[in-house]
Length: 409
Ligand code: NAD
Ligand code: MG
Image (cartoon, rainbow, N blue to C red):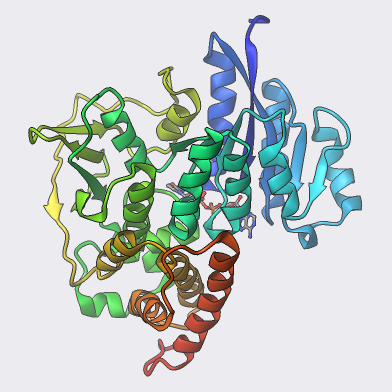
């Protein structure tokens, strides 16, 4: 075992749903991988610092304690308190870092082999871009970065030879289906569980509460992506993500409803043959595959149970009840500044809904309205995209104030 070379992993957004699953996979790989030792080299948390403490402690007991712990929100803890609580959890002294710039610094660090981009939303953009520019292997959960700046990030990855490896289960499935085919895919078929409102009426959706919308039937996830799944904006973001990750056009992408979340996506080839990837709904598998690709090793995800009947259904989507999908296809088609605007509008609208300020059924129309109100540009730079992100946040708040019928409190 002492011959094993070490893989240093920086997990940005380590305290979230994907982050904690990633830390678990790293610990597991470190125990079972005959070829490599795995180290949680850096871990970041924004405000859930108890989780950061648990992760760092566990990494130390599993093998090697982290070299860096990053507090991306410096107002969440004072340096004195951080030193008292966290310094002893480090593998080497001096590794406590504060502020968002430290995410970028860790993403570029020469010691880092793999960056797991697990921050939620546009907040993950700078560190993900930094990892791509530094030519890292990037395990990408933070789909919003590709929604905001997919064109730029793809160009940068081509220049730096960075590998952008999907963690999102649908994109991991597509990647696994196309991995061994010399012929290109004709169509990518993303599956969607349909979320908690798959069979709800328009009237029921209008009255949906935050708790109802957060209750996803098949996946345990962070709050923002859970609401995105309920509106199906998550699938819209995934259409855009697929467009950039696999360099396909919007009309090569389709979506089907698959309530069981076992078929994670499918690929159709020129001869109409369709390949699919199946596994239980458990993110540890796609996370591990992004870390060990092209190798496949034993995984904490249990195998599918062959003693049970598998009722796997696939249905077309209802675009009338889920207008987010039409928006997703449109953004994937036009590119340019559209993704940055829709992403920012959605982040704000989800926050307003969770705060009880707007209705569930206001979220997608607010995104549409903000997109309509912006002046489209085809080739924006990163600075322009970030300006538009700010503009769209204000515009969405402004449009939300003018809604005629706010939710009852
Ligand atoms: P989460 O809310 O559980 O975790 C988010 C992480 O980001 C936390 O570590 C948090 O501390 C950190 N964070 C929050 N705001 C931040 C900020 N402003 N600056 C820096 N860090 C910040 O979210 P999640 O469900 O783990 O999702 C993370 C990403 O992975 C999202 O882009 C999501 O779309 C994607 N994803 C998640 C799942 C899933 O099963 N949870 C599946 C596919 C893709
Ligand atoms: Mg997904």
